[in-house]
Length: 285
Image (cartoon, rainbow, N blue to C red; front, side, top):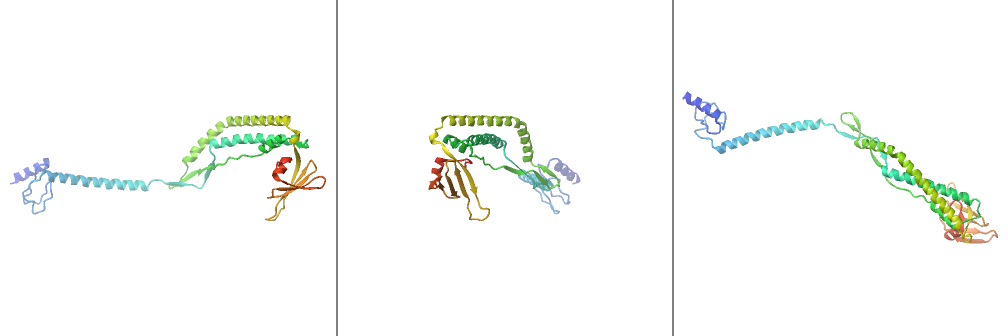
């Protein structure tokens, strides 16, 4: 009996995939197979399906244990991660392409301003001014602005571990700024050429206008003076024009008619368009 019992243990230990007997009286449990209560399992064999189910159940328990351990590890890792939020300091800048356009436009505007000063210096000695020159001055005095919103981003970020570090946007900005400063001399040279070319074009137009103007269509030059009240919400400015042909006119802000008096003291009213076709205001107002 004892020999048989030991033989069964050996077989169960080495070949768990065959069968197991639980009809002995002792409470010892098989190393592999189903659990036997103290009263025994009875004489039965373990089918291959039973063994497969036991194997799958064991693997499921093992997998679940590993998953729980991994999940716990991930939670601990997540809770220890450093988190960062944007700080209060910000950087505002325009993109290089926009800044280059502004610089080039500025060079052209400087040339236009120089052209206006040239025309004003010429007309100081004139009683009348050619229409083409007056028109050219008006065009040069029109400023064209570029509009655009700057890029704004946080300069740094404050982290949960107590440190402060620059944002990636700020690091990219520093690289861009370095590249901009490297290329600026070439841009300055280009802008200088734009200024010189534009001023040369204006000077040529001025010469052409003076050479081809028709005295019969010249405009009479007028000095301009504005009188505006210092206080009062409803108060309006009064514009006064003193012209080289002896005519004086005045106009109230918001109105289009010009009330004029000639050198003989006669009253005459011009619309703004009629006045501009006959007279030229020095300040181009």
